[in-house]
Image 1 (cartoon, rainbow, N blue to C red):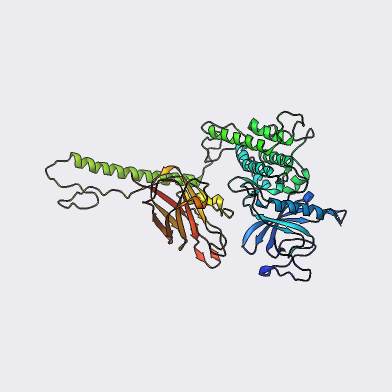
Image 2 (image 1 turned 120 degrees about the vertical axis):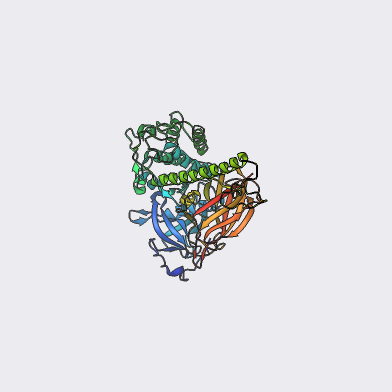
Length: 530
Protein backbone atom coordinates (compact mmCIF):
# COMPACT_ATOMS: atom_id res chain seq x y z
CA UNK A 1 0.00 0.00 0.00
CA UNK A 2 1.39 3.46 -0.86
CA UNK A 3 2.93 5.52 1.92
CA UNK A 4 0.78 8.05 3.80
CA UNK A 5 1.08 11.71 2.81
CA UNK A 6 1.20 14.63 5.20
CA UNK A 7 -1.53 17.24 4.68
CA UNK A 8 0.99 19.90 3.65
CA UNK A 9 2.84 17.75 1.14
CA UNK A 10 1.82 18.66 -2.45
CA UNK A 11 0.64 16.04 -4.93
CA UNK A 12 2.81 15.79 -8.03
CA UNK A 13 1.11 13.49 -10.59
CA UNK A 14 3.43 11.90 -13.17
CA UNK A 15 3.63 12.58 -16.90
CA UNK A 16 2.03 16.00 -16.66
CA UNK A 17 -1.41 14.59 -15.79
CA UNK A 18 -3.57 16.82 -13.64
CA UNK A 19 -4.18 16.21 -9.97
CA UNK A 20 -7.72 15.15 -9.04
CA UNK A 21 -10.32 17.58 -7.80
CA UNK A 22 -10.75 16.89 -4.05
CA UNK A 23 -14.52 16.83 -4.49
CA UNK A 24 -14.95 14.64 -7.56
CA UNK A 25 -13.42 12.08 -9.89
CA UNK A 26 -13.48 12.39 -13.65
CA UNK A 27 -11.56 11.20 -16.70
CA UNK A 28 -7.98 12.42 -16.54
CA UNK A 29 -7.71 12.35 -12.73
CA UNK A 30 -4.82 10.47 -11.18
CA UNK A 31 -5.34 8.27 -8.13
CA UNK A 32 -2.38 7.79 -5.77
CA UNK A 33 -0.11 9.60 -8.24
CA UNK A 34 -0.10 6.49 -10.43
CA UNK A 35 -3.50 5.42 -11.81
CA UNK A 36 -4.87 7.79 -14.46
CA UNK A 37 -8.63 7.42 -14.90
CA UNK A 38 -9.51 7.09 -18.61
CA UNK A 39 -13.16 6.06 -18.94
CA UNK A 40 -15.92 5.33 -16.46
CA UNK A 41 -17.54 2.03 -17.43
CA UNK A 42 -20.10 1.54 -14.68
CA UNK A 43 -21.19 2.02 -11.08
CA UNK A 44 -22.67 0.06 -8.18
CA UNK A 45 -24.64 2.75 -6.33
CA UNK A 46 -25.53 0.53 -3.39
CA UNK A 47 -21.81 0.06 -2.74
CA UNK A 48 -20.91 3.67 -3.54
CA UNK A 49 -18.53 2.27 -6.16
CA UNK A 50 -17.52 3.58 -9.58
CA UNK A 51 -15.85 1.33 -12.15
CA UNK A 52 -13.09 2.88 -14.27
CA UNK A 53 -10.78 1.78 -17.02
CA UNK A 54 -7.47 3.41 -16.11
CA UNK A 55 -3.79 3.43 -17.01
CA UNK A 56 -1.01 2.43 -14.67
CA UNK A 57 1.39 5.25 -15.58
CA UNK A 58 4.34 3.44 -13.97
CA UNK A 59 4.01 0.12 -15.82
CA UNK A 60 2.17 1.71 -18.77
CA UNK A 61 -0.65 -0.80 -18.98
CA UNK A 62 -4.44 -0.77 -18.69
CA UNK A 63 -5.94 -1.56 -15.31
CA UNK A 64 -9.43 -1.61 -13.77
CA UNK A 65 -10.00 0.69 -10.80
CA UNK A 66 -12.96 0.45 -8.42
CA UNK A 67 -13.35 3.81 -6.66
CA UNK A 68 -15.42 4.14 -3.47
CA UNK A 69 -17.29 7.45 -3.18
CA UNK A 70 -19.39 8.95 -0.40
CA UNK A 71 -23.05 8.06 -0.84
CA UNK A 72 -25.29 11.14 -1.04
CA UNK A 73 -28.42 11.05 1.12
CA UNK A 74 -30.77 14.01 0.55
CA UNK A 75 -27.83 15.97 -0.80
CA UNK A 76 -25.63 15.37 2.26
CA UNK A 77 -22.86 12.79 2.75
CA UNK A 78 -23.96 9.49 4.22
CA UNK A 79 -22.48 9.29 7.75
CA UNK A 80 -22.15 5.51 7.38
CA UNK A 81 -20.22 5.63 4.09
CA UNK A 82 -16.80 5.83 5.77
CA UNK A 83 -17.46 2.78 7.90
CA UNK A 84 -18.88 0.95 4.89
CA UNK A 85 -15.83 1.77 2.77
CA UNK A 86 -13.45 0.77 5.56
CA UNK A 87 -15.16 -2.62 5.81
CA UNK A 88 -14.91 -3.10 2.04
CA UNK A 89 -11.22 -2.19 2.03
CA UNK A 90 -10.50 -4.63 4.87
CA UNK A 91 -12.29 -7.40 2.99
CA UNK A 92 -10.29 -6.57 -0.15
CA UNK A 93 -7.04 -6.84 1.80
CA UNK A 94 -8.15 -10.23 3.10
CA UNK A 95 -8.79 -11.32 -0.48
CA UNK A 96 -5.38 -10.16 -1.69
CA UNK A 97 -3.93 -13.67 -1.84
CA UNK A 98 -6.95 -15.13 -3.69
CA UNK A 99 -6.33 -15.77 -7.38
CA UNK A 100 -8.51 -17.62 -9.88
CA UNK A 101 -8.97 -17.65 -13.64
CA UNK A 102 -12.56 -16.49 -13.11
CA UNK A 103 -11.48 -13.23 -11.45
CA UNK A 104 -9.23 -10.35 -12.43
CA UNK A 105 -6.05 -10.39 -10.33
CA UNK A 106 -5.95 -7.83 -7.51
CA UNK A 107 -2.92 -5.54 -7.92
CA UNK A 108 -3.32 -2.76 -5.34
CA UNK A 109 -5.60 -1.63 -2.51
CA UNK A 110 -5.71 2.04 -1.48
CA UNK A 111 -7.28 3.32 1.73
CA UNK A 112 -8.68 6.79 2.38
CA UNK A 113 -5.92 9.27 3.12
CA UNK A 114 -3.32 7.45 1.06
CA UNK A 115 -0.90 9.63 -0.86
CA UNK A 116 -2.57 11.34 -3.81
CA UNK A 117 -6.15 10.28 -2.92
CA UNK A 118 -8.98 12.84 -3.43
CA UNK A 119 -10.77 13.83 -0.25
CA UNK A 120 -14.08 12.47 -1.53
CA UNK A 121 -12.59 9.04 -2.35
CA UNK A 122 -12.90 6.64 0.56
CA UNK A 123 -10.78 3.89 -1.00
CA UNK A 124 -9.92 2.16 -4.25
CA UNK A 125 -8.87 -1.23 -5.55
CA UNK A 126 -6.85 -1.89 -8.69
CA UNK A 127 -7.09 -5.10 -10.73
CA UNK A 128 -5.85 -6.28 -14.09
CA UNK A 129 -7.92 -4.97 -16.97
CA UNK A 130 -10.09 -7.72 -18.47
CA UNK A 131 -10.09 -7.36 -22.28
CA UNK A 132 -13.21 -8.25 -24.18
CA UNK A 133 -16.75 -6.93 -23.77
CA UNK A 134 -19.23 -6.05 -21.08
CA UNK A 135 -22.26 -8.23 -20.44
CA UNK A 136 -24.47 -5.75 -22.32
CA UNK A 137 -22.12 -5.65 -25.32
CA UNK A 138 -21.99 -9.46 -25.39
CA UNK A 139 -25.75 -9.91 -25.75
CA UNK A 140 -26.26 -6.86 -28.00
CA UNK A 141 -25.49 -8.82 -31.18
CA UNK A 142 -28.33 -11.31 -30.66
CA UNK A 143 -29.06 -14.57 -28.92
CA UNK A 144 -26.14 -16.63 -27.65
CA UNK A 145 -26.19 -20.38 -28.01
CA UNK A 146 -27.14 -22.05 -24.72
CA UNK A 147 -24.06 -24.27 -24.65
CA UNK A 148 -21.81 -21.27 -25.34
CA UNK A 149 -23.48 -19.45 -22.43
CA UNK A 150 -22.82 -22.45 -20.17
CA UNK A 151 -19.15 -22.45 -21.14
CA UNK A 152 -18.93 -18.72 -20.39
CA UNK A 153 -20.33 -19.04 -16.87
CA UNK A 154 -18.55 -22.30 -15.94
CA UNK A 155 -15.17 -20.72 -14.94
CA UNK A 156 -16.96 -17.97 -13.00
CA UNK A 157 -18.90 -20.59 -11.04
CA UNK A 158 -15.63 -22.38 -10.28
CA UNK A 159 -14.16 -19.08 -9.02
CA UNK A 160 -17.18 -18.47 -6.78
CA UNK A 161 -16.91 -22.00 -5.38
CA UNK A 162 -13.23 -21.48 -4.60
CA UNK A 163 -13.85 -18.02 -3.09
CA UNK A 164 -16.64 -19.30 -0.83
CA UNK A 165 -14.30 -22.05 0.36
CA UNK A 166 -11.94 -19.28 1.54
CA UNK A 167 -14.70 -17.33 3.27
CA UNK A 168 -14.89 -14.69 0.51
CA UNK A 169 -17.61 -13.37 -1.80
CA UNK A 170 -17.13 -12.09 -5.36
CA UNK A 171 -20.06 -9.69 -5.76
CA UNK A 172 -21.13 -11.13 -9.11
CA UNK A 173 -24.77 -10.10 -8.58
CA UNK A 174 -24.14 -6.76 -10.35
CA UNK A 175 -24.01 -6.84 -14.19
CA UNK A 176 -21.34 -4.16 -14.60
CA UNK A 177 -18.83 -6.04 -12.46
CA UNK A 178 -18.69 -8.80 -15.09
CA UNK A 179 -16.82 -8.83 -18.41
CA UNK A 180 -16.57 -11.54 -21.08
CA UNK A 181 -13.03 -12.26 -22.30
CA UNK A 182 -12.18 -12.66 -26.02
CA UNK A 183 -11.98 -16.45 -25.56
CA UNK A 184 -15.48 -16.54 -24.06
CA UNK A 185 -15.04 -16.63 -20.27
CA UNK A 186 -17.04 -14.58 -17.78
CA UNK A 187 -14.78 -12.86 -15.23
CA UNK A 188 -15.30 -10.59 -12.24
CA UNK A 189 -13.52 -7.47 -13.51
CA UNK A 190 -14.30 -5.01 -10.68
CA UNK A 191 -13.90 -5.87 -6.99
CA UNK A 192 -14.97 -4.33 -3.64
CA UNK A 193 -18.45 -5.88 -3.27
CA UNK A 194 -20.72 -4.10 -0.79
CA UNK A 195 -20.79 -5.25 2.86
CA UNK A 196 -23.47 -7.69 3.83
CA UNK A 197 -23.17 -9.80 0.69
CA UNK A 198 -23.17 -13.55 1.29
CA UNK A 199 -22.32 -16.58 -0.85
CA UNK A 200 -26.05 -16.86 -1.55
CA UNK A 201 -25.90 -13.50 -3.35
CA UNK A 202 -23.07 -14.82 -5.53
CA UNK A 203 -25.17 -17.90 -6.37
CA UNK A 204 -28.05 -15.64 -7.42
CA UNK A 205 -25.57 -13.61 -9.47
CA UNK A 206 -24.35 -16.71 -11.31
CA UNK A 207 -27.93 -17.57 -12.21
CA UNK A 208 -28.60 -13.98 -13.28
CA UNK A 209 -25.55 -13.91 -15.59
CA UNK A 210 -26.54 -17.21 -17.21
CA UNK A 211 -30.13 -15.97 -17.53
CA UNK A 212 -28.92 -12.78 -19.24
CA UNK A 213 -26.74 -14.68 -21.70
CA UNK A 214 -29.71 -16.90 -22.57
CA UNK A 215 -32.42 -14.23 -22.79
CA UNK A 216 -30.58 -10.86 -23.16
CA UNK A 217 -32.45 -9.59 -20.06
CA UNK A 218 -31.17 -9.03 -16.49
CA UNK A 219 -33.48 -10.77 -13.97
CA UNK A 220 -32.43 -8.99 -10.74
CA UNK A 221 -32.47 -5.21 -10.07
CA UNK A 222 -34.20 -3.24 -12.83
CA UNK A 223 -32.19 -0.11 -11.97
CA UNK A 224 -28.93 -2.07 -12.27
CA UNK A 225 -30.11 -3.38 -15.65
CA UNK A 226 -30.87 0.15 -16.88
CA UNK A 227 -27.47 1.51 -15.82
CA UNK A 228 -25.75 -1.45 -17.49
CA UNK A 229 -27.62 -0.92 -20.77
CA UNK A 230 -29.52 -4.20 -20.41
CA UNK A 231 -33.22 -4.91 -20.71
CA UNK A 232 -34.90 -5.84 -17.44
CA UNK A 233 -36.56 -9.25 -17.42
CA UNK A 234 -40.36 -9.19 -17.61
CA UNK A 235 -42.15 -10.15 -14.40
CA UNK A 236 -45.68 -11.08 -15.45
CA UNK A 237 -46.33 -12.92 -12.17
CA UNK A 238 -43.94 -11.06 -9.89
CA UNK A 239 -40.90 -13.07 -10.95
CA UNK A 240 -39.07 -13.59 -14.26
CA UNK A 241 -40.17 -16.52 -16.44
CA UNK A 242 -37.87 -19.48 -16.97
CA UNK A 243 -35.45 -19.05 -19.90
CA UNK A 244 -37.20 -21.86 -21.80
CA UNK A 245 -40.39 -19.79 -21.73
CA UNK A 246 -38.54 -16.90 -23.43
CA UNK A 247 -36.67 -18.78 -26.16
CA UNK A 248 -36.61 -22.26 -27.64
CA UNK A 249 -33.79 -24.77 -27.41
CA UNK A 250 -32.68 -24.10 -23.81
CA UNK A 251 -31.53 -27.42 -22.29
CA UNK A 252 -33.53 -28.48 -19.25
CA UNK A 253 -30.34 -28.48 -17.15
CA UNK A 254 -29.63 -24.78 -17.87
CA UNK A 255 -33.28 -23.99 -17.22
CA UNK A 256 -32.88 -25.69 -13.85
CA UNK A 257 -29.73 -23.71 -13.02
CA UNK A 258 -31.51 -20.41 -13.67
CA UNK A 259 -34.75 -21.24 -11.92
CA UNK A 260 -32.96 -22.90 -9.00
CA UNK A 261 -30.51 -20.06 -8.33
CA UNK A 262 -33.04 -17.26 -8.85
CA UNK A 263 -35.76 -18.94 -6.83
CA UNK A 264 -38.24 -18.87 -9.70
CA UNK A 265 -41.29 -20.69 -8.38
CA UNK A 266 -40.67 -19.67 -4.77
CA UNK A 267 -38.56 -21.04 -1.95
CA UNK A 268 -40.61 -24.23 -1.92
CA UNK A 269 -39.98 -24.96 -5.59
CA UNK A 270 -38.19 -28.21 -6.30
CA UNK A 271 -34.62 -28.06 -7.51
CA UNK A 272 -33.51 -25.04 -5.45
CA UNK A 273 -29.78 -24.42 -5.97
CA UNK A 274 -28.02 -23.04 -2.89
CA UNK A 275 -24.26 -23.26 -3.59
CA UNK A 276 -21.77 -22.23 -6.24
CA UNK A 277 -20.39 -25.78 -6.14
CA UNK A 278 -23.79 -27.07 -7.28
CA UNK A 279 -23.92 -24.50 -10.11
CA UNK A 280 -20.43 -25.43 -11.23
CA UNK A 281 -21.23 -29.18 -11.14
CA UNK A 282 -24.41 -28.71 -13.20
CA UNK A 283 -22.60 -26.58 -15.79
CA UNK A 284 -19.71 -29.07 -15.93
CA UNK A 285 -22.18 -31.85 -16.72
CA UNK A 286 -23.90 -29.81 -19.42
CA UNK A 287 -20.57 -28.99 -21.10
CA UNK A 288 -19.35 -32.59 -20.81
CA UNK A 289 -22.59 -33.90 -22.33
CA UNK A 290 -22.24 -31.40 -25.18
CA UNK A 291 -18.72 -32.69 -25.86
CA UNK A 292 -19.98 -36.28 -25.86
CA UNK A 293 -22.81 -35.52 -28.30
CA UNK A 294 -20.76 -33.42 -30.73
CA UNK A 295 -21.27 -36.03 -33.47
CA UNK A 296 -25.06 -35.59 -33.43
CA UNK A 297 -27.04 -32.70 -34.92
CA UNK A 298 -27.82 -30.04 -32.29
CA UNK A 299 -31.33 -29.10 -31.20
CA UNK A 300 -32.45 -25.91 -32.90
CA UNK A 301 -32.00 -23.14 -30.31
CA UNK A 302 -33.15 -20.05 -32.17
CA UNK A 303 -29.68 -19.08 -33.43
CA UNK A 304 -28.40 -19.42 -36.98
CA UNK A 305 -25.45 -21.59 -37.89
CA UNK A 306 -22.11 -20.03 -38.74
CA UNK A 307 -19.81 -21.04 -41.66
CA UNK A 308 -17.46 -22.97 -39.37
CA UNK A 309 -20.15 -25.20 -37.82
CA UNK A 310 -20.05 -28.92 -38.57
CA UNK A 311 -23.84 -29.14 -38.71
CA UNK A 312 -25.37 -26.59 -41.07
CA UNK A 313 -28.99 -25.43 -41.03
CA UNK A 314 -30.52 -26.16 -44.45
CA UNK A 315 -32.85 -23.21 -43.97
CA UNK A 316 -29.87 -20.91 -44.08
CA UNK A 317 -29.71 -18.64 -47.14
CA UNK A 318 -27.73 -20.58 -49.72
CA UNK A 319 -26.59 -17.30 -51.28
CA UNK A 320 -24.65 -16.31 -48.17
CA UNK A 321 -20.99 -17.02 -48.79
CA UNK A 322 -17.76 -16.56 -46.91
CA UNK A 323 -15.34 -15.00 -49.46
CA UNK A 324 -12.26 -15.67 -47.37
CA UNK A 325 -13.16 -19.31 -46.87
CA UNK A 326 -13.95 -19.69 -50.59
CA UNK A 327 -10.57 -18.24 -51.53
CA UNK A 328 -8.75 -20.54 -49.10
CA UNK A 329 -10.65 -23.53 -50.55
CA UNK A 330 -9.54 -22.62 -54.08
CA UNK A 331 -5.93 -22.24 -52.93
CA UNK A 332 -6.10 -25.63 -51.19
CA UNK A 333 -7.52 -27.33 -54.26
CA UNK A 334 -4.79 -25.78 -56.40
CA UNK A 335 -2.08 -27.06 -54.07
CA UNK A 336 -3.70 -30.50 -54.05
CA UNK A 337 -3.78 -30.58 -57.84
CA UNK A 338 -0.08 -29.69 -58.08
CA UNK A 339 0.72 -32.39 -55.51
CA UNK A 340 -1.20 -35.01 -57.52
CA UNK A 341 0.68 -34.08 -60.72
CA UNK A 342 4.04 -34.34 -58.94
CA UNK A 343 3.16 -37.77 -57.52
CA UNK A 344 1.93 -39.03 -60.93
CA UNK A 345 5.10 -37.76 -62.59
CA UNK A 346 7.29 -39.48 -60.01
CA UNK A 347 5.35 -42.76 -60.40
CA UNK A 348 5.72 -42.50 -64.18
CA UNK A 349 9.50 -42.18 -63.85
CA UNK A 350 9.71 -45.16 -61.51
CA UNK A 351 7.50 -47.35 -63.68
CA UNK A 352 9.54 -46.42 -66.75
CA UNK A 353 12.74 -47.43 -64.99
CA UNK A 354 11.17 -50.68 -63.79
CA UNK A 355 9.67 -51.86 -67.08
CA UNK A 356 12.07 -50.24 -69.56
CA UNK A 357 14.60 -52.41 -71.48
CA UNK A 358 17.64 -53.48 -69.48
CA UNK A 359 20.06 -53.20 -72.43
CA UNK A 360 21.72 -50.03 -71.27
CA UNK A 361 19.35 -47.73 -73.16
CA UNK A 362 19.34 -44.08 -72.36
CA UNK A 363 18.33 -43.25 -68.79
CA UNK A 364 15.08 -41.43 -68.22
CA UNK A 365 15.91 -38.15 -66.57
CA UNK A 366 13.48 -35.59 -65.11
CA UNK A 367 14.76 -32.03 -64.76
CA UNK A 368 18.42 -32.78 -65.57
CA UNK A 369 20.87 -34.73 -67.75
CA UNK A 370 22.06 -38.29 -67.34
CA UNK A 371 25.59 -38.97 -66.20
CA UNK A 372 27.13 -42.38 -66.98
CA UNK A 373 27.82 -44.49 -63.91
CA UNK A 374 25.51 -42.51 -61.64
CA UNK A 375 22.04 -43.22 -60.24
CA UNK A 376 19.85 -40.73 -62.04
CA UNK A 377 16.65 -41.31 -60.07
CA UNK A 378 14.82 -38.20 -58.89
CA UNK A 379 16.20 -36.60 -55.73
CA UNK A 380 14.17 -37.22 -52.56
CA UNK A 381 11.80 -34.42 -51.51
CA UNK A 382 12.75 -31.95 -48.79
CA UNK A 383 12.19 -33.71 -45.43
CA UNK A 384 9.01 -32.83 -43.56
CA UNK A 385 5.36 -32.25 -44.31
CA UNK A 386 3.55 -29.21 -42.95
CA UNK A 387 1.22 -30.02 -40.04
CA UNK A 388 -2.22 -28.66 -40.80
CA UNK A 389 -4.59 -26.89 -38.42
CA UNK A 390 -2.66 -26.68 -35.15
CA UNK A 391 -4.53 -24.99 -32.32
CA UNK A 392 -3.08 -21.79 -30.86
CA UNK A 393 -3.63 -19.53 -27.87
CA UNK A 394 -1.74 -16.59 -26.41
CA UNK A 395 0.60 -17.64 -23.58
CA UNK A 396 0.92 -14.71 -21.19
CA UNK A 397 1.43 -15.78 -17.56
CA UNK A 398 1.54 -12.24 -16.12
CA UNK A 399 -0.47 -10.12 -18.56
CA UNK A 400 -3.78 -9.83 -20.37
CA UNK A 401 -3.06 -12.06 -23.40
CA UNK A 402 -2.28 -9.52 -26.13
CA UNK A 403 -4.81 -9.67 -28.99
CA UNK A 404 -5.96 -13.14 -27.92
CA UNK A 405 -8.91 -13.11 -30.33
CA UNK A 406 -6.55 -12.88 -33.33
CA UNK A 407 -3.94 -15.48 -32.42
CA UNK A 408 -5.50 -18.11 -34.73
CA UNK A 409 -4.35 -15.93 -37.65
CA UNK A 410 -0.77 -17.00 -36.90
CA UNK A 411 -1.55 -20.64 -37.81
CA UNK A 412 -4.33 -20.32 -40.42
CA UNK A 413 -2.10 -20.94 -43.43
CA UNK A 414 -2.83 -17.46 -44.80
CA UNK A 415 0.12 -15.07 -45.08
CA UNK A 416 -2.21 -12.09 -45.52
CA UNK A 417 -3.47 -12.40 -41.93
CA UNK A 418 -1.33 -12.00 -38.83
CA UNK A 419 -1.20 -11.73 -35.05
CA UNK A 420 0.77 -9.08 -33.20
CA UNK A 421 1.68 -8.37 -29.59
CA UNK A 422 0.65 -5.17 -27.91
CA UNK A 423 2.98 -2.20 -28.38
CA UNK A 424 5.24 -1.90 -25.34
CA UNK A 425 7.00 1.31 -24.42
CA UNK A 426 9.74 -0.64 -22.68
CA UNK A 427 11.43 -3.82 -23.94
CA UNK A 428 11.18 -7.17 -22.14
CA UNK A 429 11.81 -7.97 -19.33
CA UNK A 430 10.93 -4.53 -17.92
CA UNK A 431 7.18 -5.23 -17.83
CA UNK A 432 7.06 -9.00 -18.22
CA UNK A 433 9.53 -11.80 -19.03
CA UNK A 434 7.99 -12.42 -22.43
CA UNK A 435 4.89 -13.46 -24.31
CA UNK A 436 4.24 -16.37 -26.62
CA UNK A 437 1.94 -18.60 -28.63
CA UNK A 438 1.13 -22.06 -27.27
CA UNK A 439 0.42 -24.40 -30.18
CA UNK A 440 -1.16 -27.84 -29.86
CA UNK A 441 -1.37 -30.66 -32.40
CA UNK A 442 -4.06 -33.33 -32.73
CA UNK A 443 -1.57 -35.97 -31.60
CA UNK A 444 2.10 -36.31 -30.70
CA UNK A 445 4.36 -35.27 -33.59
CA UNK A 446 8.04 -35.69 -34.39
CA UNK A 447 9.07 -32.30 -35.78
CA UNK A 448 11.81 -31.52 -38.26
CA UNK A 449 11.66 -27.72 -38.40
CA UNK A 450 9.58 -24.61 -37.92
CA UNK A 451 9.34 -21.65 -40.28
CA UNK A 452 8.32 -18.25 -38.93
CA UNK A 453 7.00 -15.62 -41.33
CA UNK A 454 7.40 -12.24 -39.64
CA UNK A 455 8.25 -8.66 -40.62
CA UNK A 456 9.63 -7.95 -37.11
CA UNK A 457 13.39 -8.10 -37.64
CA UNK A 458 15.41 -8.69 -34.46
CA UNK A 459 12.70 -10.56 -32.55
CA UNK A 460 14.20 -13.32 -30.39
CA UNK A 461 12.12 -16.49 -29.93
CA UNK A 462 12.63 -19.64 -27.90
CA UNK A 463 10.96 -22.82 -29.11
CA UNK A 464 9.91 -24.89 -26.08
CA UNK A 465 8.12 -28.21 -25.66
CA UNK A 466 5.31 -28.24 -23.10
CA UNK A 467 3.69 -31.16 -21.23
CA UNK A 468 0.21 -29.63 -21.69
CA UNK A 469 -1.46 -26.58 -23.21
CA UNK A 470 -1.89 -25.09 -19.72
CA UNK A 471 1.68 -25.74 -18.58
CA UNK A 472 3.68 -23.11 -16.69
CA UNK A 473 6.80 -21.63 -18.29
CA UNK A 474 8.99 -23.47 -15.78
CA UNK A 475 7.58 -26.79 -16.97
CA UNK A 476 8.62 -26.24 -20.59
CA UNK A 477 11.88 -27.49 -22.15
CA UNK A 478 14.01 -25.35 -24.48
CA UNK A 479 14.40 -26.89 -27.95
CA UNK A 480 15.90 -24.00 -29.93
CA UNK A 481 16.52 -20.25 -29.80
CA UNK A 482 16.58 -17.98 -32.84
CA UNK A 483 16.68 -14.29 -33.80
CA UNK A 484 14.10 -13.65 -36.52
CA UNK A 485 14.87 -11.77 -39.69
CA UNK A 486 12.28 -9.91 -41.71
CA UNK A 487 10.56 -12.44 -43.93
CA UNK A 488 10.95 -16.18 -43.41
CA UNK A 489 13.13 -17.72 -40.71
CA UNK A 490 13.66 -21.49 -40.49
CA UNK A 491 14.40 -23.05 -37.09
CA UNK A 492 15.67 -26.63 -37.02
CA UNK A 493 13.94 -29.03 -34.60
CA UNK A 494 15.55 -32.18 -35.98
CA UNK A 495 17.01 -33.19 -32.59
CA UNK A 496 13.81 -32.70 -30.63
CA UNK A 497 11.72 -35.42 -29.00
CA UNK A 498 8.12 -36.09 -30.16
CA UNK A 499 5.78 -33.38 -28.80
CA UNK A 500 2.10 -32.47 -28.74
CA UNK A 501 2.38 -28.91 -27.40
CA UNK A 502 4.99 -26.36 -28.50
CA UNK A 503 5.45 -22.88 -27.05
CA UNK A 504 6.87 -20.14 -29.30
CA UNK A 505 8.15 -17.85 -26.52
CA UNK A 506 9.13 -14.28 -27.46
CA UNK A 507 11.86 -12.93 -25.17
CA UNK A 508 12.78 -9.86 -27.24
CA UNK A 509 10.34 -7.81 -29.29
CA UNK A 510 11.05 -6.19 -32.62
CA UNK A 511 11.43 -2.44 -32.95
CA UNK A 512 13.07 -0.53 -30.13
CA UNK A 513 12.83 2.65 -28.10
CA UNK A 514 9.19 3.09 -27.07
CA UNK A 515 7.84 1.02 -29.99
CA UNK A 516 8.42 -2.60 -29.06
CA UNK A 517 6.13 -4.98 -30.94
CA UNK A 518 6.34 -8.27 -32.81
CA UNK A 519 4.04 -9.35 -35.62
CA UNK A 520 3.80 -12.97 -36.77
CA UNK A 521 2.20 -13.71 -40.14
CA UNK A 522 2.47 -17.49 -39.98
CA UNK A 523 3.97 -20.34 -37.95
CA UNK A 524 4.43 -23.55 -39.98
CA UNK A 525 5.54 -26.76 -38.25
CA UNK A 526 6.93 -29.58 -40.37
CA UNK A 527 6.63 -33.25 -39.53
CA UNK A 528 9.84 -35.28 -39.81
CA UNK A 529 9.93 -38.11 -42.33
CA UNK A 530 9.86 -41.42 -40.54
